[in-house]
Length: 305
Ligand SMILES: NC(=O)C1=CN([C@@H]2O[C@H](COP(=O)(O)OP(=O)(O)OC[C@H]3O[C@@H](n4cnc5c(N)ncnc54)[C@H](OP(=O)(O)O)[C@@H]3O)[C@@H](O)[C@H]2O)C=CC1
Ligand SMILES: C=C(O[C@H]1[C@H](O)[C@@H](CO)O[C@H](OP(=O)(O)OP(=O)(O)OC[C@H]2O[C@@H](n3ccc(=O)[nH]c3=O)[C@H](O)[C@@H]2O)[C@@H]1NC(C)=O)C(=O)O
Image (cartoon, rainbow, N blue to C red; front, side, top):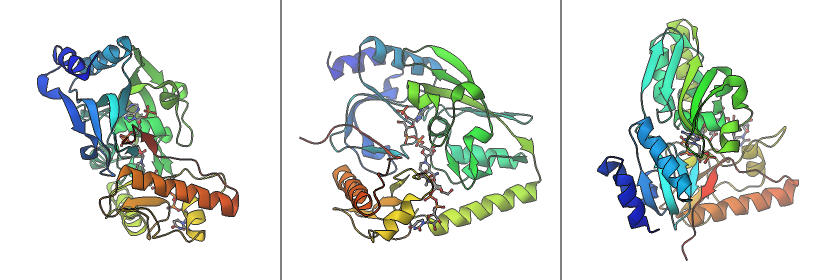
């Protein structure tokens, strides 16, 4: 089958402008890097999403799920297959202290909507770039809070396209891991349980976390956030700083001078520049400390031939 055939088949069920061919992925990643996707699908309903997943499964077409593209490094040759983004699934609903959000909803936005209803527990996410689905998959966390603390249940699609409802226990959430990534599930929506709080305290916490993030993290440049996970009992940023790697890199990519755990796209970096910089950091830290840093970012796609 050709990509033209995939385009025609998918447009037979989805709205025409929800399916594109040769879409540049640098437009959809926070690193602003990445070559084209053969086919790029942006459904606005769960039915369109399920159709795309089943179509890819039935025809054995590689399928990549993109959330907000916050944690993803797409290689310069792009992706051969179908890239599915859930950015069109944005509904957020609040009933009492239960929050329902679709997989493509912006986690920062959910955090703000919830805070405005005087509910507490979601403040930690006020500066996290990403979708609800991406945050669920990674058990996103910052400043002492994490998804695991507030999740009630999630509705997911399996790789075959079957819908399942998973309880908090089923989700197996741990540090930057979940059953979702293990099984390759797609999060359609999630429900969170919060508590009623005091508006002044909620607002003060969100302002404090925003201040900490803005002063400590290089938000002024495109990046994929923390490149490496925290090694047990240590911090990637600390180890990288101790190797004197800040300001070093390849091409337009550089280890941030503000937070060594970030690699920033300082000047039109290619994905190749970024990945070479990652490899240089890993090698240097291993040689100095014997610690093999594990990637937090996900590297996908093809190199340019
Ligand atoms: N704490 C921080 O400051 C930062 C945190 N992050 C984290 O990265 C996450 C990245 O989110 P996002 O930008 O949306 O994701 P991305 O587009 O970066 O995708 C990364 C991976 O997330 C998984 N994913 C995304 N959406 C879904 C979904 N609906 N269902 C299941 N899995 C999904 C997929 O993993 P797979 O292919 O394995 O299924 C995907 O490969 C954030 O939510 C946050 O946790 C990122 C930057 C900064
Ligand atoms: C940005 C991300 O999430 C971030 C999240 O925003 C922050 C704040 O809670 O805590 C994690 O960063 P982190 O492990 O680097 O934590 P930080 O609090 O920034 O730093 C940890 C320690 O390392 C030290 N540090 C940090 C950077 C640096 O250049 N040098 C240094 O010595 C800090 O002084 C601190 O003592 C998350 N990253 C991971 C991999 O767990 C992301 O996931 O993409």
